[in-house]
Length: 165
Image 1 (spheres, rainbow, N blue to C red):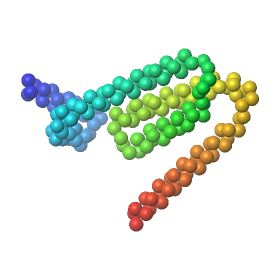
Image 2 (cartoon, rainbow, N blue to C red):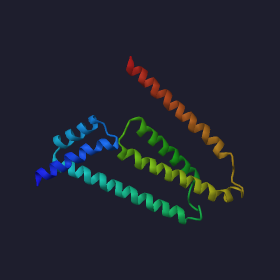
Image 3 (cartoon, rainbow, N blue to C red):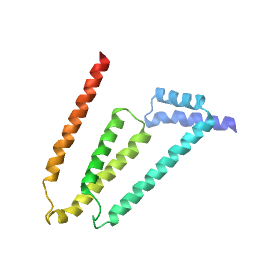
Image 4 (tube, rainbow, N blue to C red):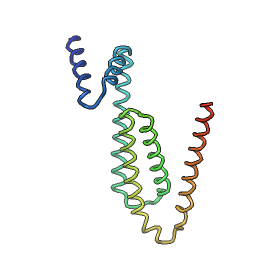
């Protein structure tokens, strides 16, 4: 039974080449399986599966809430937009750091849901904004966000140049 399991595992790992994995990735996976305690590996796989399940359930509940919501009472459209911007930054960071697809795909999917929520909330709030809410609030916050990003980038570049010296 053990030989059959190892043979099946070997064929599964080799079939990853068809999905675009390189030989170095396959060697890393083999090393991971060979050098890691089986119990720890099982717990890691279980935790990852549970995390994906809970994330999927969160997405499902979020979409069903926003699909059935017709009133924005108690909800801040501004916070939805800031949440979406934060999620975009996180996805771009994960892509920049070459994170695993197990991290990038759910984050990107969450970003798409956040974008949909913003569109839905902005569409729902247009009627309420027309009743007298100030329109200049977004014109004040957008330059602040860009200024913060420029400042953070300059600080990061300064730290990199100090480390290089």
